[in-house]
Length: 326
Image (tube, rainbow, N blue to C red):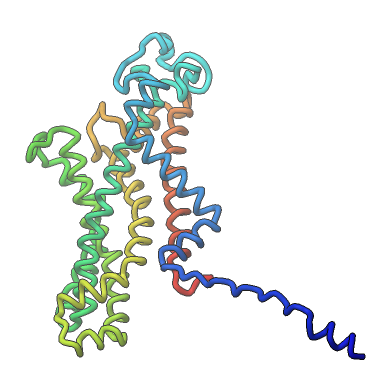
């Protein structure tokens, strides 16, 4: 009995298992972890990144894989039919997407440079919409009263305004040179201002609704009780809590702007030829799509893929930034 007791007493204590360290995560880290798990949204984001890089490095891609964007190649056009030689619009190793039926210009180069036009207009117009929409929305939501009523009525009027008709009418009366811009530069500036100005009421309504809810929260009351002024509350208390919905809506409004730019270019209110634009290429393709459908399919696919990628990424970003998400 004594031997057994002594062996039990002399036995070493069990090794203590170290407690697992709990690591805190910032809201940005949480959103990024959620976004990484969403493979569809991540794929959309990768496609968006590739499109942006293609637009930025359009001259490099054209030099490596294509031909100068406005260089005609009449030898690639059948003189009897006025159509590209070969199948699928003249696709070959030298002309990846074929050539256009009019002048024999490289469609690949025009698609890449068209991406630069579409993304530039869409991104700048989205920036205009976000700036005006956030300013008006947070002002209406925080101050309320007659200020809220006046801004809300302005939103209603702009939402009912015929944007396409106004854009076409405005382009038709604008001079070829304005404020140092000429030709297509003037058209692009008009598209950015018109699309951006008529797009801000959508984000303005979202920001207004969020601001109405946030202004009644405890942290706003606490800041007000400590003597914080209205400007401080707007800039330091409300706006930081509005970053997520603003970022999500900015991502989702970009594909809408791309479609608007393409529609205006299709109707002749976009950039001037020979500057390439996806909508302009679709407009030219309507005359020959029965005999050369490839020239319509390629810019149509470019618009479709771009809009789909932005929408998928925007939906995933909305889910990732949702504070109630898992």
